[in-house]
Image (cartoon, rainbow, N blue to C red):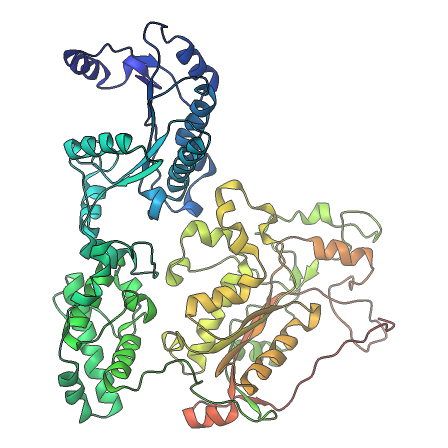
Amino acid sequence: LTGRRGPDAPGATGLRAELEELGARVTLTACDSADRDALARVLAAVPEDAPLTGVVHAAGVGQAALLADTPLDQVAAAMAAKTLGAAHLDALLDGHDLDFLVLVSSVAGVWGSAGQSAYAAANAYLDALAENRRSRGLAATSVAWGPWAEVGMASAHRTVSENLERTGLRLLDPATAMTELRRAVVRDEATVTVADVDWEQYHPVFTAARASRLFDAVDTVAGLGARETTGTASELAGRLGGLTEQEQERLLADLVRAEAAVVLGHTSAEGVPVKKAFRDAGFDSLTAVELRKRLAALTGLALPTTLVFDYPNPAALARHLRGELLGTADTGAVPATGPATTDEPIAIIGMSCRFPGGARSADAFWQLVADNTDAISEFPVNRGWDGDALYDPDPDRPGTTYSTQGGFLHDAGEFDAGFFGISPREAVSMDPQQRLLLETTWEAFEHAGIDPAAVHSTPTGTFIGSTYQDYGVAMDDGSAGHAVTGSSPSVLSGRLAYSFGLEGPAVTVDTACSSSLVALHLACQSLRNGESTLALAGGATVMTNPMPFIAFSRQRALARDGRCKAFSEGADGMTLAEGVGILVLERLSDARRNGHEVLAVVRGSAVNQDGASNG
């Protein structure tokens, strides 16, 4: 028996005594299986009169956080405990004639486990190694275990074991588990999964957030659909028939809220606001499945297991139920509003912004301009820029700039991550441009008189212009898991589409200074050709390092005092500045029909390039 602490491990002495009473001869040795040299010494010490005929590799280190929130050293530890030891055994046992090599794996490697990505990958490696050894004619059986009772990782944590039981993944009786282990070895199969599963409870939970056919071959799962609880849909539809559309949706929303309150343990439906996201109200995969079952029983509808995730609040779910009950559900085959004529004007119905000088709204920006306010300032003091070291009047000196003034968003780093359901670690990894776009988009919808929750699952397009994507360059390893989504230009538009549930095109445009205008042009086209019924258009610029100033200083393109003097005899260059702006667009005919205030109208736009011009 080997372990990192050997005979000093808790319970080791008692285990040896128990095994010796059963007639075994036991040697306890301290050895980390991830240490190849140490493992080789242990194997070399096996006496010739008692040759090695079987090995059980049962090492493991758990993981209890999302991969992006897990430090790399913990990811490495979770991987190494299983993979390195198994790889070393595979190599060092090559000359041994083994009757069996049992690799203790987990169901996490077969069908995944939330918050255990690294652990799951390590177990999947064991399964693959067993298959590989079998292909080489060598003994190996990887047993993917469900949680055990009395012993093991799950049983050591009461909360974990209780949560597993709630999902339908019951704890294995150790005696039953040992019987199945013997069968697995005797059956001579490379991979075996052993778990005590209540499929009627577990399968709906497993498929609640995302459909999966992984268990379709399980007989119990195949029969679940036939035994689905049914109600009297015609009865409820009859009640709805005499009501107005608004009354129908109110009745169904009250029904949804009442059932949601029961599931969450609230004393009344007041605890579940009609437009509050189910996620924010406290729903998880388990409670989502329970709500879906209750609504299926009450409505008589065959509702998908992903119901709560597809329709994220009581209002949206009520609209869906109404459509299903009355036969008016949108199949998605035909747009809600057909394409307009190619030259129909586009209405701007909402806007929001962040501009230098502290302008956090269109009204504030208007006032700033009306007051003739100078919004140009020195370098921000909260970005780690060393203004003294960066400044040099010589435009040819490398690594410096002769202008340290520009238009800055000095509070660009401020962000209410919790409001958008984003973890602090991920928020730090997000480009400030993404954060500001989330905030201004929410405000723009509100400015347009549109509930941000109401646009979920609608063909709303997202068109964002942006040029600078250098935020992730200085990311440390602790936040590296979010670096790709945190700094990728495509995510500037993609995160908006994801966060608000927008199903129209999501496009990020970089055409330098014209990026936002081109984004507006594309948004207008999308509305006119019918692929979007509503559209967001805008852009964001936040300079997270001083490189733009350094680069444009080499070109002598900056005004020394940081002020543009267009058409003036004293013009000596441009000024770099930051800002965020979002417009909500709608076809003019739709805006009038929907009662939205029209702030401005775009009657036409075009895009071209100068080609080989003089600059």
